[in-house]
Amino acid sequence: MTKITFIQHDGEEQTLDVEKGLSVMNAATDHLIPGIDGDCGGECNCATCHVYIDDAWIEKVGQPHDAEEAIMSLNPERQKNSRLSCQVKLTEELDGIVVHMPEFQY
Image (tube, rainbow, N blue to C red; front, side, top):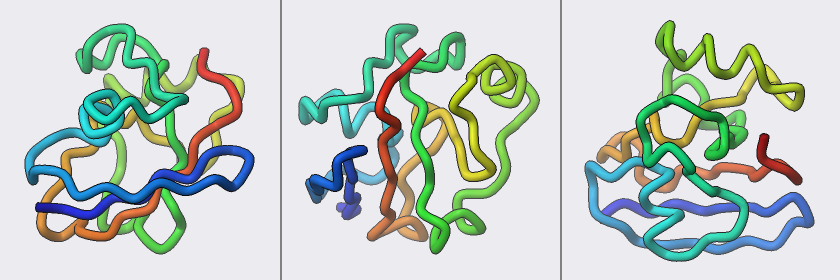
């Protein structure tokens, strides 16, 4: 199991223990976490699963690949720590990860 904490834009936190190997998006949608829509089902074709990776975790998560970069370039709320949560897989190395939710998804 992997622990993940979701922090809503208003500061509300929810911590889950989920199966390793799931994407952050799947962990959120499987547990009805508000704020992650995942309209494309995790295919990296939209930005409705946009999150901000907590600064303490950004190096462990790594950089987005070209397809994710292309989708994120269209997002007006993008920050240096923005990622599509469908592209972040929960591994043992990411046990305890913290992600922040944007106020809106595009």
